[in-house]
Image 1 (tube, rainbow, N blue to C red):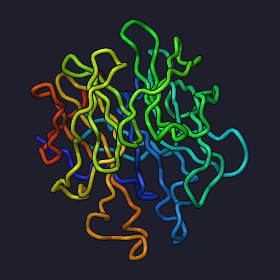
Image 2 (image 1 turned 90 degrees about the vertical axis):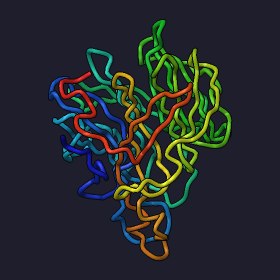
Image 3 (image 1 turned 90 degrees about the horizontal axis):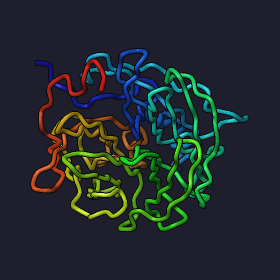
Length: 314
């Protein structure tokens, strides 16, 4: 049996793959991973411009998630002029076409706090995208969309709202095009990157508190019970030090495979003043989560064997 490697994937051009999301490409017969392509190799200036001006990278796996190859960047996202910023893609398959909800910030900034929005694009092949709209979510600072189909029809989106406590807010849609804001969803500690999935008869939300991924449980996708964090302590595998960050989850049977990223240089003491490259670079990892005693548990040191994703698709 082939072991799943650690790290699972590193971007071969910028070495800054972050915020992964994984989806089956029906036409190609492959699993595709979309990610924020951070500019780790940007000029050595001690500010945050290197996380702006980013493309959305794509990697592909034809062997059930064992190996991933870089394929390029998502095409068609840029609709204006100049260099703008794309973060944290969420990709949804409605059975006919694909929808991407991606965080958008105009320009490149040296400090945090620029206005952010969520843009909607559609595609028939996951490679080339057509702009549809910029969502009106009653905030000037929204990023990190997650979209799930509701059991009774329609869709719900969760996202980070920096205008409202850096908490998770929601919106609903009947058709993935028209969205109505629904208010606060989770208002515990400040966080980002909500991700929602169903497993073991419950719904689960992971949020990134920058100290591990906080687990929330729900029976109705509205009221959330707060549980412990997963991926809070360093793993022992290569590039798996430090807390896991901004994850996506693919459910396969009774297991949830959590795709997350790490800053592997930071637990070893790399600071921006010592080594910008070591401080900035990121790696994608994957770990299995399951439900035990009504709680979501995850051992990031568990050795996984291929395939972890169905080679013929979901």
